[in-house]
Image (cartoon, rainbow, N blue to C red):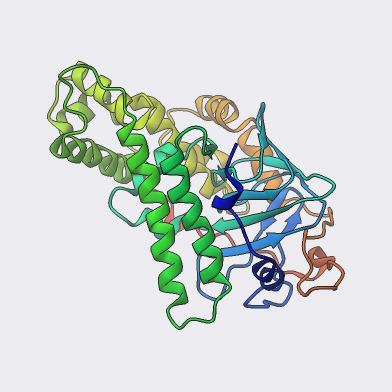
Length: 350
């Protein structure tokens, strides 16, 4: 159970958080079919909400990473075949591009943070953190009190900065976000169950493994073998295999496949971009292999996944009105569809 004092928000803060600081017209979270569009603040890569509406979301997905912290009441998240019951104070991270649904209690409240991971992806070392976030992650006090307390403090600081009028607001937000994910990485490196005599936590070894992750980021569309990766790291194949698994919690080929799937997701956002081309440019050897792997990882075929993004006709309301006392808008009618960030010309080439 998470100690309430570690995620406490005062009545004054709750009232303040009911009003979006930017007041973007039609700036609600909206579902277009089952794809969620999110307007971020100005040129920022993030948008936050303090939500008190007793409503959830049907199955949907978005290109942004999502962090949820229930403050009152239990929320239930469904991701693929897994169900997560989120208790007050839990910090729950939903990876970008993950199909999920959320059930809300009759009465409750939560903080919701939506973050586009693109700005983080440019930073050295984030490829390791991203590998940890390929699956949902829950942070609780019972698992590690000190780690939870540090991350909960940052979550609350993010809210304070987001709803502030400080001239350094954006800088403070990015500083908190970077610190939050740095702690995610540090926590998991610290928990690597190394064998006696293993040097996985040695900084030089970590650097060599990170070099392999950087190489995969740049060459995932090419044919990369385990032997090549081990050679880049400077280890024998068998030693590299063990170290890579300890470092990323994935085998080498699992990690490479996950990277290719993420690249294919971006290509599938481009209307009429051939699925076959997405398969080839993401590095898969055949369309059948791509279809099979994609369905295993995402729970649906590439075509079905694309349809979840492009199909319309389902009108939804966001969970919180723009101003206290306002009725939620039917913003699905009025909002323009977001344009995919990537285009075919930005996709990896053969």
